[in-house]
Image (cartoon, rainbow, N blue to C red; front, side, top):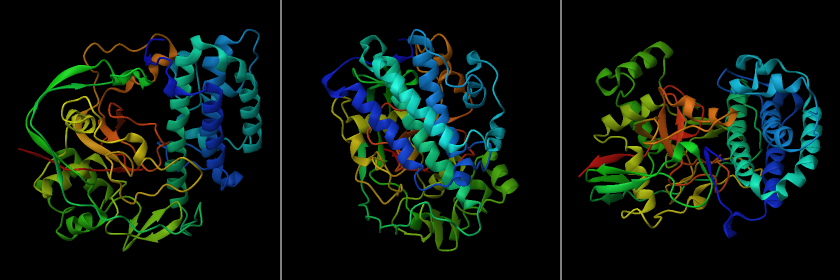
Amino acid sequence: MPGVQARQSAATGDLAERYARVRSLSEALVGPLSETDATLQSMEDASPAKWHLAHVTWFWETFLLRDHEDGYSLYDEDWPFVFNSYYEAEGKRIARFSRGMLSRPTLENILAWRAHVDDAMQPLLEREELRPLVELGFAHEQQHQELLLTDIKHALFQNPLGPAMWDTQVPSARKQADDWYEHPGGIARIGHQSDGFAFDNEGLAHRVLLEPFALSSRLVTNGEWSEFIADGGYDEATLWLSDGWAWVQENGVRAPLYWREQQHFTHSGWQERDPDAPVTHISYYEADAFATWAGKRLPTEFEWEAIARGQEGELAAHDPASGNQLDDASPPLPIGSDSLFGDCWQFTRSGYLPYPRFQPAEGAVGEYNGKFMSGQFVLKGASCATARGHSRASYRNFFYPHQRWQYTGLRLAKDL
C-alpha cells in the first residue's frame, strides 16, 4: 500500500493479538475518567477523551471494514460526520472546536461501538494483503493514546482544584551524567531503512552531509530551566527568535506550561517539581531561546538520527523500546532515561518538510502526513506518554513552534 512501508516478519507478531493489546490499552486509559471528564475539550488543539476513542474506531470501520469487508454496514451512518478528523476525501465534518459539545453519543455508546467493530475486525486480521493497512491502524491508535493523555491533562489543568487522574506520587528523577555523543561528520543515511512499519513521511531513505558535532547525552532539566528564568531568560529579547519574542510578549509567558512556584501539574495533580527531572511542555521558541542562553544550539533532525543509529548509521546506539513508559494504564512520568527515547519529544531545528522523492499515498490515507508539511518543526525520540515501541530513529513527530501541551523538551547540541 502506498504511503506505508511494512512487510511480514517474525518480529511483527500475530495481528489479532496486537490488535487486542492496542485496543484494550485505549480503553484502560479512560478508566479513571467520568463521563464529564471524557467530554471535556479545553482548546481547539485538544480533543475530548471519548472523541479519541471514537475517532480511532471510525478509522478502523472506515478504512478497513467499510472498504474491505463485503456487506458491512456502518454502525451509525451519522457518526462519520462527528468522528472524522481532517480527511477531506471522507467528506464534511464538524468543526474541530465543536468536539467538546458532543454530549451524545455517550462514553457507554462509544464503548459499545468499539466492541462491535472489534468483533467485525477479526476476519480481516487474518488477511495478509491487509497487513500494511492494519499496521497503520495500530500506529494511528497509538498516536491517539498519547494525544488522549496530553489532552485530558490540559483539560484537568483548567480546574482550579487540580484534580488527579491517578492518585500516585511522582517518583524522584534519576540524575543524569553530563556527557556528549560526538560525531565526526560525513555522509549519513537518513530515513526508514528496515522491513518494519514506518509512516510515509519517514521515507525515502537518503544521504545527508553532516559537519562534526556533538549531542548531549541527557535532556535539559527543570533545575536548569529555573536558572534560565532566574537569569532573566524570558526578559532578554536577544535570546529569542523574532516570532518567539512576539509570542512571549503577547501571551505573557514566564515559564513552561503547567508550572507554578515550585510545583507543576501532572496526571497525579499538583506535585513538587523535581529539579533533576527533564523539563517538559515547552515550545520550540522556548527551546531555541534556552539553547542560545546556554551557548549551544538545537540539533538538526539528521544529527539526532545519526546518533540514534550509531555513528556509522548501521547499529542502533539506543533501543527505542527502552525509554517509552506507556505500556499499561499508569500515569506518564518524565523522570530521566538513559535512552534517547522516552521522557519527552525533543525539538530539532529542522523544519517539517518532505524528504527527497517523497510522494503521499493516493486516496484519503494520503492526507495522513504530507499535507501538514508547512510551518512546523520536527521532534525526535518519544515521550513518557508514547506507547512502548511506537517510536524509532527515523520517526518524525511535528508541531507548530508555539505549541507546548505535548511532552516536549530539548537536548542540546554543539559544533565541533
